[in-house]
Image 1 (cartoon, each protein chain N blue to C red):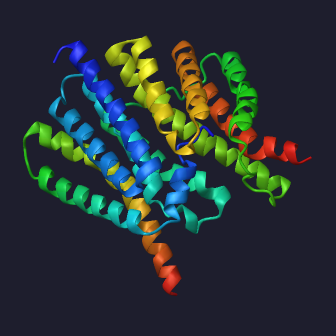
Image 2 (tube, rainbow over the protein chains, first blue to last red):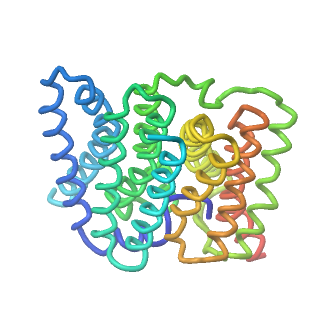
Image 3 (cartoon, rainbow over the protein chains, first blue to last red):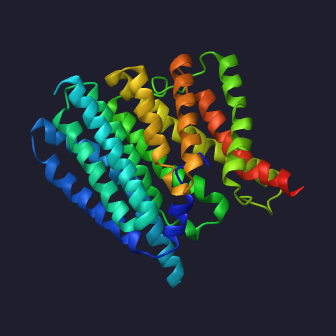
Length: 75
Length: 255
Protein backbone atom coordinates (compact mmCIF):
# COMPACT_ATOMS: atom_id res chain seq x y z
CA UNK A 1 0.00 0.00 0.00
CA UNK A 2 1.27 3.48 -0.73
CA UNK A 3 1.09 4.49 2.91
CA UNK A 4 3.86 5.09 5.39
CA UNK A 5 1.77 3.41 8.12
CA UNK A 6 3.05 -0.06 7.34
CA UNK A 7 2.26 -3.58 8.50
CA UNK A 8 5.41 -3.59 10.61
CA UNK A 9 4.51 -0.28 12.27
CA UNK A 10 1.19 -1.66 13.41
CA UNK A 11 2.53 -5.10 14.35
CA UNK A 12 5.22 -3.42 16.45
CA UNK A 13 2.75 -1.12 18.15
CA UNK A 14 0.78 -4.02 19.51
CA UNK A 15 3.96 -5.50 20.99
CA UNK A 16 4.34 -3.12 23.93
CA UNK A 17 4.51 0.34 25.46
CA UNK A 18 8.29 0.72 25.06
CA UNK A 19 7.93 2.80 21.89
CA UNK A 20 5.55 5.18 23.65
CA UNK A 21 8.10 5.58 26.44
CA UNK A 22 10.94 6.17 23.94
CA UNK A 23 8.96 8.80 22.06
CA UNK A 24 8.11 10.50 25.38
CA UNK A 25 11.83 10.63 26.21
CA UNK A 26 12.44 12.17 22.77
CA UNK A 27 9.68 14.72 23.41
CA UNK A 28 11.22 15.69 26.77
CA UNK A 29 14.64 16.00 25.09
CA UNK A 30 13.22 18.25 22.36
CA UNK A 31 11.33 20.44 24.86
CA UNK A 32 14.41 20.79 27.08
CA UNK A 33 16.63 21.60 24.06
CA UNK A 34 14.18 24.22 22.87
CA UNK A 35 14.13 25.87 26.30
CA UNK A 36 17.94 26.01 26.28
CA UNK A 37 18.47 27.31 22.76
CA UNK A 38 15.75 29.99 22.67
CA UNK A 39 17.60 31.82 25.44
CA UNK A 40 20.66 32.16 23.17
CA UNK A 41 21.04 35.04 20.73
CA UNK A 42 23.27 33.26 18.17
CA UNK A 43 21.52 32.81 14.83
CA UNK A 44 22.15 29.04 14.28
CA UNK A 45 20.81 28.27 17.75
CA UNK A 46 17.74 30.44 17.22
CA UNK A 47 17.13 28.65 13.90
CA UNK A 48 17.58 25.28 15.65
CA UNK A 49 15.05 26.31 18.31
CA UNK A 50 12.46 27.12 15.64
CA UNK A 51 12.97 23.78 13.87
CA UNK A 52 12.50 21.79 17.08
CA UNK A 53 8.81 22.78 17.02
CA UNK A 54 8.44 20.52 13.97
CA UNK A 55 9.23 17.49 16.13
CA UNK A 56 7.57 18.75 19.31
CA UNK A 57 4.04 19.35 17.96
CA UNK A 58 3.33 15.85 16.55
CA UNK A 59 4.95 14.16 19.54
CA UNK A 60 2.75 16.24 21.86
CA UNK A 61 -0.32 14.95 19.98
CA UNK A 62 0.99 11.41 20.32
CA UNK A 63 1.75 11.92 24.04
CA UNK A 64 -1.76 13.34 24.64
CA UNK A 65 -3.29 10.27 22.97
CA UNK A 66 -1.12 7.87 25.01
CA UNK A 67 -2.03 9.60 28.30
CA UNK A 68 -5.74 9.83 27.36
CA UNK A 69 -5.96 6.10 26.65
CA UNK A 70 -4.06 5.24 29.85
CA UNK A 71 -6.48 7.40 31.89
CA UNK A 72 -9.49 5.77 30.15
CA UNK A 73 -7.99 2.36 30.91
CA UNK A 74 -7.74 3.18 34.61
CA UNK A 75 -11.30 4.59 34.72
CA UNK B 1 30.82 22.54 0.72
CA UNK B 2 30.63 22.16 -3.08
CA UNK B 3 27.65 20.71 -4.93
CA UNK B 4 29.07 17.18 -5.19
CA UNK B 5 29.71 17.21 -1.45
CA UNK B 6 26.10 18.28 -0.84
CA UNK B 7 24.86 15.47 -3.10
CA UNK B 8 26.95 12.96 -1.13
CA UNK B 9 25.39 14.21 2.11
CA UNK B 10 21.91 13.79 0.55
CA UNK B 11 22.73 10.22 -0.55
CA UNK B 12 24.20 9.45 2.89
CA UNK B 13 20.94 10.51 4.53
CA UNK B 14 18.89 8.40 2.10
CA UNK B 15 21.06 5.39 3.03
CA UNK B 16 20.63 6.23 6.74
CA UNK B 17 16.83 6.33 6.34
CA UNK B 18 16.90 2.97 4.48
CA UNK B 19 19.05 1.55 7.31
CA UNK B 20 16.71 2.90 10.01
CA UNK B 21 13.68 1.46 8.22
CA UNK B 22 15.40 -1.91 7.77
CA UNK B 23 16.27 -2.04 11.48
CA UNK B 24 12.69 -1.02 12.38
CA UNK B 25 11.15 -3.63 10.10
CA UNK B 26 13.47 -6.61 10.39
CA UNK B 27 15.26 -6.24 13.74
CA UNK B 28 13.94 -4.06 16.54
CA UNK B 29 11.53 -1.12 16.28
CA UNK B 30 13.02 0.46 19.43
CA UNK B 31 16.50 0.68 17.84
CA UNK B 32 14.85 1.83 14.60
CA UNK B 33 13.12 4.63 16.46
CA UNK B 34 16.45 5.66 18.03
CA UNK B 35 18.20 5.75 14.63
CA UNK B 36 15.31 7.75 13.15
CA UNK B 37 15.49 10.18 16.09
CA UNK B 38 19.24 10.72 15.67
CA UNK B 39 18.75 11.16 11.90
CA UNK B 40 16.01 13.75 12.42
CA UNK B 41 18.03 15.69 15.01
CA UNK B 42 21.16 15.70 12.83
CA UNK B 43 19.13 16.99 9.85
CA UNK B 44 17.67 19.79 11.97
CA UNK B 45 21.15 20.64 13.26
CA UNK B 46 22.56 20.67 9.72
CA UNK B 47 19.77 23.02 8.63
CA UNK B 48 20.53 25.36 11.53
CA UNK B 49 24.27 25.41 10.81
CA UNK B 50 23.67 26.17 7.12
CA UNK B 51 20.72 28.40 7.91
CA UNK B 52 21.48 31.07 5.30
CA UNK B 53 22.87 28.75 2.62
CA UNK B 54 19.78 28.12 0.55
CA UNK B 55 18.60 25.86 -1.01
CA UNK B 56 20.48 22.83 0.39
CA UNK B 57 19.78 23.86 4.00
CA UNK B 58 16.04 23.85 3.22
CA UNK B 59 16.38 20.31 1.91
CA UNK B 60 17.87 19.12 5.22
CA UNK B 61 14.93 20.65 7.08
CA UNK B 62 12.30 19.11 4.82
CA UNK B 63 14.08 15.73 4.74
CA UNK B 64 13.74 15.59 8.55
CA UNK B 65 10.03 14.89 7.91
CA UNK B 66 10.93 11.40 6.62
CA UNK B 67 12.34 10.03 9.92
CA UNK B 68 9.72 12.06 11.79
CA UNK B 69 6.90 10.25 9.93
CA UNK B 70 8.20 6.91 11.23
CA UNK B 71 8.75 8.30 14.77
CA UNK B 72 5.13 9.50 14.73
CA UNK B 73 3.66 6.29 13.34
CA UNK B 74 5.55 4.26 15.96
CA UNK B 75 4.57 6.50 18.87
CA UNK B 76 0.87 7.08 18.17
CA UNK B 77 -1.14 4.36 20.02
CA UNK B 78 -2.88 3.16 16.83
CA UNK B 79 -3.99 -0.18 18.26
CA UNK B 80 -6.31 1.67 20.67
CA UNK B 81 -8.31 2.85 17.63
CA UNK B 82 -10.47 0.82 15.20
CA UNK B 83 -8.34 -0.47 12.30
CA UNK B 84 -10.07 1.58 9.62
CA UNK B 85 -9.19 4.84 11.43
CA UNK B 86 -5.42 4.19 11.72
CA UNK B 87 -4.41 6.05 8.57
CA UNK B 88 -6.39 9.13 9.59
CA UNK B 89 -5.14 9.07 13.19
CA UNK B 90 -1.50 8.79 12.05
CA UNK B 91 -2.06 11.40 9.33
CA UNK B 92 -3.06 14.22 11.71
CA UNK B 93 0.30 14.60 13.56
CA UNK B 94 2.14 14.20 10.22
CA UNK B 95 0.03 17.03 8.80
CA UNK B 96 0.81 19.19 11.85
CA UNK B 97 4.56 18.54 11.42
CA UNK B 98 4.29 19.37 7.71
CA UNK B 99 2.49 22.64 8.37
CA UNK B 100 5.13 23.54 10.96
CA UNK B 101 7.88 22.85 8.38
CA UNK B 102 6.10 25.01 5.81
CA UNK B 103 5.84 27.80 8.37
CA UNK B 104 9.58 27.62 9.21
CA UNK B 105 10.44 27.64 5.49
CA UNK B 106 7.93 30.39 4.71
CA UNK B 107 6.25 28.19 2.08
CA UNK B 108 2.57 28.75 1.27
CA UNK B 109 0.04 26.15 0.10
CA UNK B 110 0.24 27.34 -3.51
CA UNK B 111 4.05 27.09 -3.49
CA UNK B 112 3.76 23.55 -2.12
CA UNK B 113 1.60 22.58 -5.09
CA UNK B 114 -1.88 22.90 -3.63
CA UNK B 115 -3.32 24.71 -6.62
CA UNK B 116 -5.59 23.84 -9.52
CA UNK B 117 -3.26 24.44 -12.47
CA UNK B 118 -4.03 22.34 -15.58
CA UNK B 119 -7.29 20.81 -14.24
CA UNK B 120 -7.77 18.35 -17.12
CA UNK B 121 -4.28 16.96 -16.70
CA UNK B 122 -4.89 16.71 -12.93
CA UNK B 123 -8.09 14.73 -13.55
CA UNK B 124 -6.22 12.37 -15.88
CA UNK B 125 -3.44 11.87 -13.32
CA UNK B 126 -6.04 11.24 -10.58
CA UNK B 127 -7.60 8.42 -12.62
CA UNK B 128 -4.29 6.56 -12.75
CA UNK B 129 -5.04 5.67 -9.13
CA UNK B 130 -7.51 3.00 -10.31
CA UNK B 131 -5.04 0.82 -12.25
CA UNK B 132 -2.31 1.52 -9.66
CA UNK B 133 -4.67 0.26 -6.92
CA UNK B 134 -5.41 -3.00 -8.73
CA UNK B 135 -1.71 -3.47 -9.58
CA UNK B 136 -0.72 -3.06 -5.95
CA UNK B 137 -3.56 -5.33 -4.84
CA UNK B 138 -2.06 -8.06 -7.02
CA UNK B 139 1.24 -7.55 -5.15
CA UNK B 140 0.08 -7.22 -1.52
CA UNK B 141 -3.37 -8.92 -1.43
CA UNK B 142 -4.43 -7.16 1.82
CA UNK B 143 -7.51 -8.00 3.88
CA UNK B 144 -10.47 -5.59 3.42
CA UNK B 145 -9.97 -2.57 5.69
CA UNK B 146 -13.57 -2.26 6.90
CA UNK B 147 -15.71 -5.24 5.84
CA UNK B 148 -18.77 -4.37 7.97
CA UNK B 149 -19.16 -0.68 7.13
CA UNK B 150 -22.30 0.74 5.48
CA UNK B 151 -22.21 2.48 2.09
CA UNK B 152 -22.01 5.94 3.70
CA UNK B 153 -19.41 4.70 6.16
CA UNK B 154 -17.30 3.39 3.28
CA UNK B 155 -17.72 6.68 1.38
CA UNK B 156 -16.53 8.67 4.40
CA UNK B 157 -13.63 6.27 4.91
CA UNK B 158 -12.65 6.59 1.23
CA UNK B 159 -12.61 10.40 1.54
CA UNK B 160 -10.59 10.15 4.77
CA UNK B 161 -8.07 7.82 3.06
CA UNK B 162 -7.71 10.21 0.12
CA UNK B 163 -7.01 13.11 2.48
CA UNK B 164 -4.83 11.32 5.05
CA UNK B 165 -2.71 9.07 2.84
CA UNK B 166 -3.06 10.96 -0.45
CA UNK B 167 -2.93 14.65 0.28
CA UNK B 168 -0.80 14.56 3.45
CA UNK B 169 1.89 12.20 2.09
CA UNK B 170 2.05 13.98 -1.27
CA UNK B 171 2.34 17.32 0.51
CA UNK B 172 5.32 15.91 2.43
CA UNK B 173 7.12 14.11 -0.41
CA UNK B 174 6.27 16.06 -3.57
CA UNK B 175 5.10 19.38 -2.11
CA UNK B 176 7.95 19.97 0.35
CA UNK B 177 10.86 17.50 0.05
CA UNK B 178 10.91 17.22 -3.76
CA UNK B 179 10.49 20.98 -4.14
CA UNK B 180 13.64 21.53 -2.04
CA UNK B 181 15.57 18.62 -3.59
CA UNK B 182 14.93 19.85 -7.14
CA UNK B 183 15.91 23.38 -6.11
CA UNK B 184 19.14 22.08 -4.60
CA UNK B 185 20.24 19.39 -7.07
CA UNK B 186 18.15 19.72 -10.23
CA UNK B 187 15.15 17.80 -11.55
CA UNK B 188 16.68 14.38 -12.27
CA UNK B 189 18.64 13.96 -9.03
CA UNK B 190 15.91 15.52 -6.92
CA UNK B 191 13.24 13.28 -8.40
CA UNK B 192 15.22 10.04 -8.00
CA UNK B 193 16.37 10.94 -4.47
CA UNK B 194 12.87 11.71 -3.22
CA UNK B 195 11.38 8.60 -4.89
CA UNK B 196 14.07 6.58 -3.04
CA UNK B 197 13.12 8.15 0.32
CA UNK B 198 9.42 7.52 -0.47
CA UNK B 199 10.14 3.86 -1.29
CA UNK B 200 12.35 3.49 1.81
CA UNK B 201 9.44 4.40 4.07
CA UNK B 202 7.52 1.45 2.59
CA UNK B 203 10.11 -1.18 3.61
CA UNK B 204 7.77 -2.01 6.51
CA UNK B 205 5.36 -3.72 4.09
CA UNK B 206 8.02 -6.46 3.85
CA UNK B 207 7.60 -6.88 0.11
CA UNK B 208 10.45 -6.26 -2.33
CA UNK B 209 8.10 -6.10 -5.38
CA UNK B 210 6.07 -3.47 -3.51
CA UNK B 211 9.18 -1.36 -2.83
CA UNK B 212 10.03 -1.44 -6.56
CA UNK B 213 6.39 -0.60 -7.38
CA UNK B 214 6.31 2.31 -4.88
CA UNK B 215 9.66 3.63 -6.19
CA UNK B 216 8.23 3.65 -9.75
CA UNK B 217 5.05 5.34 -8.54
CA UNK B 218 7.20 7.88 -6.67
CA UNK B 219 9.05 8.69 -9.91
CA UNK B 220 5.73 9.02 -11.78
CA UNK B 221 4.17 11.26 -9.11
CA UNK B 222 7.33 13.36 -8.91
CA UNK B 223 7.51 13.78 -12.69
CA UNK B 224 3.81 14.73 -12.91
CA UNK B 225 4.22 17.27 -10.10
CA UNK B 226 7.18 18.81 -11.93
CA UNK B 227 5.27 19.01 -15.21
CA UNK B 228 1.99 20.37 -13.83
CA UNK B 229 3.25 22.42 -10.86
CA UNK B 230 0.48 20.96 -8.72
CA UNK B 231 0.14 18.04 -6.29
CA UNK B 232 -3.67 17.80 -6.54
CA UNK B 233 -3.69 15.15 -9.31
CA UNK B 234 -1.01 12.98 -7.69
CA UNK B 235 -2.66 13.32 -4.25
CA UNK B 236 -5.96 12.08 -5.69
CA UNK B 237 -4.17 9.28 -7.55
CA UNK B 238 -2.32 8.28 -4.36
CA UNK B 239 -5.54 8.32 -2.33
CA UNK B 240 -7.56 6.45 -4.99
CA UNK B 241 -4.80 3.80 -5.20
CA UNK B 242 -5.26 3.12 -1.48
CA UNK B 243 -9.07 3.19 -1.72
CA UNK B 244 -8.98 0.61 -4.54
CA UNK B 245 -6.36 -1.47 -2.72
CA UNK B 246 -8.06 -1.56 0.68
CA UNK B 247 -11.76 -1.13 -0.08
CA UNK B 248 -12.70 -1.79 -3.72
CA UNK B 249 -10.37 -4.59 -4.89
CA UNK B 250 -10.86 -6.83 -1.80
CA UNK B 251 -14.65 -6.32 -2.10
CA UNK B 252 -14.64 -7.27 -5.82
CA UNK B 253 -12.46 -10.26 -4.99
CA UNK B 254 -15.02 -11.43 -2.41
CA UNK B 255 -17.93 -11.27 -4.88
